[in-house]
Structures are given as structure tokens and as C-alpha cells.
Amino acid sequence: MQRRSSSRESTKNPSTKPKRRGKQSSIEFSTKNAKRRRDTHALPDEEIETISDDESTPITPDSSSLWFEKYQPTKSSELAVHKGKVNAIRQWMTENIPFSRLLVLSGPPGCGKTTTVRLLAHEMGASLVEWSNPMDTRLINQEHDYEQFSLSEKFRRFMSLAETYPELELSSSTKAPKKTNSSEEKKFILLDELPHLSKQTGTLQMFREVLLSALQSRGSYSIILVLTETKQINSEGNNFQEKELNSGTQILGPDLVEHHHVSIIQMNPIATTFMKKAIDNILKKEKILVQSKSSAFIQELISASEGDLRSALNALQFYLPKENRQRKSFGKNENLKSQTEVSTEASEMLNRIASKKDSPYSALSTFQYKQNVDDEDKQKEFQKDIGLGMLHALGKVVWNKREGDDEILSLNNQTHSNLTYNKEKLQQKGSAVFNLSSKANDIEKRPSLVDIKTTIEQAGLSGSMFRYGIFENYLDSCLNQMEAHSVSDILSFADTMAVDYPYSYRADEMSLWFAIQGTLWYLPSPVPRKWRQLKFHRWREEEIPNKPSDDYLAICGKSSAIKYVETLINDENQALEDPDDPIEDDDSA
Ligand SMILES: Nc1ncnc2c1ncn2[C@@H]1O[C@H](COP(=O)(O)OP(=O)(O)OP(=O)(O)O)[C@@H](O)[C@H]1O
Image (cartoon, rainbow, N blue to C red; front, top):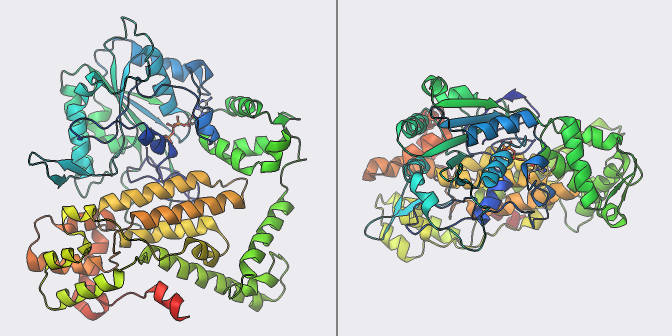
């Protein structure tokens, strides 16, 4: 499920926001979702975008080059999860427990909750229907036209229809294991990621009601809900975080927690011995020789991952230099990068950035990662340069100017200033017109003018800082929850590419590239940084039925909306001011 984590704070929190997986910050999503999307089956009625069951997703070694996917266990005996927990889950899944229809698996990220459920269901030959947040919230209505549905509405429909899905023939290409009589009837719904749940918008209440009514139904399926306990960032000023939803029980609410049909199993972080065994196995399969099994490095890595096997495997894979893998030898400290080598690599990267002609960071070439720059003023100057460059680069990304934006925005402003909103006319011109129509999503996005390479160079030192910067700022560029979810998903994916410990510049740069590219893709076209005022005004003036404020409130929170309305009342000019255009700044520089 979701998590927000940060080095700034470390409180457990199974939050229900769009998720972003990663140590540095923010909302999570996971690469496993990406994988799941590859296994997606379009249902005939196109009602649910992502669904999989054991027949369609056989548990076989993954062709992915990411170790945590490539070496996923193929049978329950290979799980790095404590046997007692595996047995408890198996017992719940196999036994006829007439009074328990919902199993809640709660535990830290990467401790094997989902993998265990998938493997056990597969071994039992049971059907496993999975919900994963669809990227597209449109449904086809009876007139064969698209209608916009909220994610929570889709979730509700999924739950009400899910019982029939296991009967559908999804794929004939893969064979499910032979079903035994005892498990023939077994059907499970796996809820591993949830729509954005919020008290404000009522989606939390809806979620609880859906689960309660599922428990009361006569359906033959059982539900397994995976809740990920996470570290929480101090969300001062960040409206995505609902502080009241800081534990699994708070998400479920007393009615569900105390419900006699509900069982809760608390999972623990993966034990260091299990993790070590899993890592050793993978190194063996990769033919990387470990000279000393108790190498300090692996031990450090295991303890730094806090029982999160996925994160440990990512760290190991990214940190191991390519040459190491080629030489197939992984000795004590022999082939590992020392701290000095990492600093040298950082220094090289700085030089590479700084030595570019016209680089705004030419000052950095003298900096060279010297810890001993005596001149305090000089050091401050460098820091200022880096900060400004980073802000500028960040502005470019969240502004995301695309080809043709200028024309559309000026046309839009004219129409707006005349207080006539001629949507048709703008659409004829190929404009996205601030997405007030559900069909606006259909309009093809124009190419972005942001050059990713230059942006990364301008961003300066730290990819993780920059990704965090995007995370803190992208919301103002989004028009609806779907866009916010999509960008958040991308940032989560990018988090899994970079690893906190031990630090790898290669991985950091790669994940930053991915984060920027994905963000640019999912931001609306054009990005209406002024969407708040536009929406508020237009919505009042034209009484647009699907109140955009719902999206605004869900994304930005109530206090932010009130603050904005106050600004509008006090100083409308300032509120309607055009933001700076970083691309234009670049051109004029
Ligand atoms: N021996 C192993 N046992 C369990 N998982 C393993 C093993 N080897 C590799 N893995 C990988 O570790 C990852 C464990 O993540 P999984 O999604 O199951 O955890 P989770 O607790 O559901 O995490 P989250 O709550 O963040 O979704 C999987 O990607 C799995 O393929």
C-alpha cells in the first residue's frame, strides 16, 4: 500500500495517499505495479483496467533486469518470510473460516506481504483477483461515450463486480496448477493499493462502506487487504497527508477492526538472517563470488534496509559496479567502491557539468567536492549558485512548457478577459483548454520544450533533492487527482531506481531522468499554473456542473483553498499574476 517516508521523520504510517516508494520522501507507488500493469487484461466491458489472477500471472522467474523482480521466489518454501507468518496466512486461506472474510496484512514495506499471498494463492490453485489503481478513470457508458469516474467510484464498481471476474477466461496461454478439490472454490480479492482515501472528500467512508457491505454479502470470495506501515514525513504545509490516517486501524475504523469477519495478521520486517540468505542466493545466481560471507558491506546494507528486502536488493544491484559483475568477484572491500571513490565519482560528475561551455556552474570546477574550502563566503556563493540552478530547473519541469503553449495560453487569456468562454473555438484550434471537459484527456499531448539533459545539468548536485523538489511542487501543476496520482506513481518508480545506501550516482542520475521524463509526460497540456483562479472564476461564472473544486480540495486541501480565496478577495491582481516562464528566461539569458 502507500507510504510516505523521509529521512526527516520516522513515524509509522500506513497512509492512504497516492503512494511513492522510496527512502527520501513522499508518496509511494511501486515497480510491482508497473509489472502488474504489464500483466493487465482488458475486460470485455472495459470497466476495470487492471486485473490479474493466477492463471494469467504464473509465478515464474521474471525476465526483468531488476533483481527483486528477477529473483522473486517461485514457491512458498523460498520465501524470506517467517514460517509462522506464512503458515498463519496459509491457514486463513485454506481453512474454511466461515466467520472470516477479510484478512488484513499489516506490516512494513518490502517484508513480503504481497509475494506471500500471491505464492500461496498460486500453490492452492485459487483465483486471485487484484485491484490496482487504474491510470485511466474513464468508463464507457451506454451511448458508447466516455464518462469520467473517480477512482473511488471505480473501486466501488470493482468490488461489486469482482466476484464474477474469476469466472472470466482471461488467458489461455499459461496453465494454472492443477486445482485440488478443497481449493476449487477458493477466490480471493487482493487489495494491495488503494485509491486516495480522505475524510474530507468522503472516500474513506466510501472505502469502509464498500468493505462492510462486501463482508455482509453472500459472495464466495474472501478479501485480503495489504496495509503498508510506513515512515511519515512531517507534512507541515503538505496537503496530501491526512494526519488522522496514521495507522491501519484508523484507516479501517472501529466497525471493521472489531468486525467478527475480520482477521488481522501483523507482519514483521524481514529478519537479517533471512535477508542475508536471500541476498547470498541471488549473488550466487548472478555468479558473483562473495569471499567473506560476513562482509561488513552486506551486513551494513542489510541493517540499513530495515527489513525491506526490495530496498536491499535495489541497493545491492545499483551499488555493485559493472566491472564487479563482469569480473564475477565480490570480495571483502576489494571491489566495492570506497567512500573516497564515490567522492571521486561525484567530483568527476561535477567537473563534467561545470566544464561544459556556457555552463552556469563553471564556478563548480574549482569546487571539486573539496571538503576543505576555507573561504566561507566562496562556499556560500557556490551553494547559492547550486540552489538557483536547481530552482530554475525545477521551475522548468513543473511549468512544462510544450510546443504551442504560448498560442493557446494567449488565446485563452483573451477569451477569459472578455468573460466569454468559447470552448468550441479553442478546441477547434487544438487546445486542451484547461481540461474542463472530460474529453480533454483525449487530446494528444504536445511535445515538451524541456530538455531533460540540460535540466539535469542545471539541477546540479543531488538527484534525490531534485526529485524531492518535483514532489513538493508538482501538485500545483495538476488539474485533477488522476494527474496527481500518475506523477506520484512515476516519482515512486523513480525512487525504487535510486538507493539511499550506499549512494550511487549512476542510479541517482538514472532515476532523476526517469522522474523528469515521466512528470513531463503526465502533467496536463498546457500546465495551468493558474488553474486555481481559472477554475474558481469559471466555475462561479459558468456554473460548470462537475465542480472542479472537488479535485482542488482533494489535491490541495481545505486550508489551502481558503487561503487562496482570501488572496483572491484581498488582491485579485496578485492572484491572477502570470507566473514566470523559466523556458523564456533560458532563451533570453
Ligand atoms: N526470498 C524472498 N522472499 C520474499 N520476497 C522476495 C524474496 N526474494 C526476492 N523477493 C522480492 O522482494 C519483494 C518483496 O516485496 P513485497 O511486495 O512482497 O512486499 P510487501 O510487504 O507487499 O511490500 P509493500 O507493502 O511495500 O507492497 C518482492 O519484489 C519479491 O519479489
